[in-house]
Amino acid sequence: MAGIFYGVGVGPGDPELMTLKAVRMIRENEVILVPGEEAETSVAYKIALGAVPELSSKKVFPVPMPMTKDRKKLEESHDRAADQVEVYLKEGKNAVFLTLGDPTVYSTFTYIEKRIKKRGYETGIVSGIPSFCAAAACMDVPLTEWSQELHILPALHCIEEERDYPGTVVLMKSGRKIGQVKEWLKKSGRQVVMAENCGMENQRIYRSAEEIPQDAGYYSLIIAKEAEE
Image 1 (cartoon, helix red, strand yellow):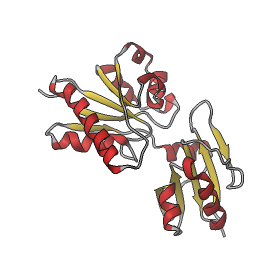
Image 2 (cartoon, helix red, strand yellow):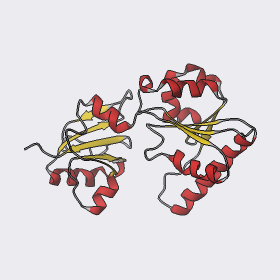
Image 3 (cartoon, helix red, strand yellow):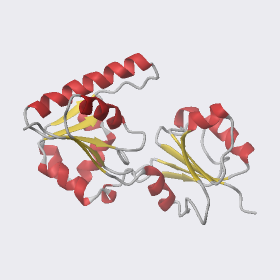
Image 4 (cartoon, helix red, strand yellow):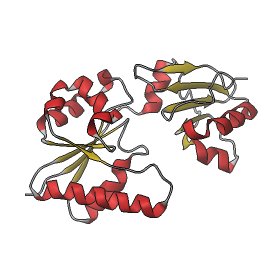
């Protein structure tokens, strides 16, 4: 019997926000994988370790993923990751891939999962609390009310299209383009809040576009709501 490849969401940063099922999956399985060059420096690993201390005694395997937009390099890295995962599945072991937030939202797991499925293996997903839900909660901001629309977008997409969206806009992966994002937000007239490193020890909250620093980190999430009339 071949093993099963699981994507397990560890939530946005606070170990207390991990689900009971995520904790159980980590405890019950031998092969744990995390994105990054070194397991111990992976953010997903550090979050999981806070909820599952025994993780430190397991062999955790890093899955290198280059930070690039080069399609060819990305495809190659995803192929290599699938090769790595397949080794464990052939041995009859489940492979548990830890991912920030939820595995279905802008997750590296998705690209590996597609390849594993094509190779004939079974896969599964354990949902985690998405970063935008956690950020809305920590800032005490409702994402939607009544019939309002909710749009979840990579910040770069929103900037490049230069279009507005009704309702609430959540901008993810804002860090690298924060200057351009701030300008778009100021022009939009929206009510803006941003959480940087939500749920982590170095969490920071900003209550307007003007407050957002130019050096905001990679884990910066913005909620921009249409101004109330």
